[in-house]
Amino acid sequence: MTGPVGRAVQTAMHSDAGRLPEIAEARRRLFADRFRRAEPVITRAIERGELPAETDPVELLKTLAAPIYFRLLVSAEPIEEGTADQAVRITLAAALTQGSAVAVKATEADAGQA
Image 1 (cartoon, rainbow, N blue to C red):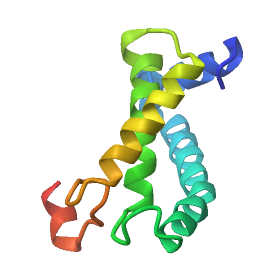
Image 2: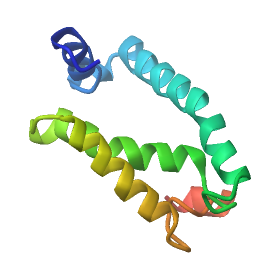
Image 3: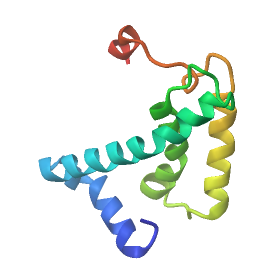
Image 4: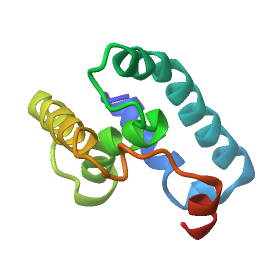
C-alpha cells in the first residue's frame, strides 16, 4: 500500500469518497482484517510477559498505525523505514507505561464515554 496505486487507494478510502457506503464498508473490512491477523502476535507477547496482561491488542495496533496514517493522510510527510521504527518504539513505550490507554482494556462503561 506504499506504492503509487496503494497510496491512491488509501487516499480514496480516507477522503470524502469514504462517505460512500461501499467505500466505508471496504475500509471497515480492511482494518478489521488487519486487526484480526495481528491480534495473535500481540496476544503471544502478552502471554510471554513482554506486554502487560491488560494490553488491548486493537488499541495497541491503532497506536502503532496512527503516526503512519497521519503522514499519509494529513501532513504528506514521507513515510520511510525510520517512520515505522519510531512508531514501534513509541507504541511499545506507551504499552509498557502502567495505566496508559494502550495498556488498559476498555470496559463497557469506558467505551460508552469515549
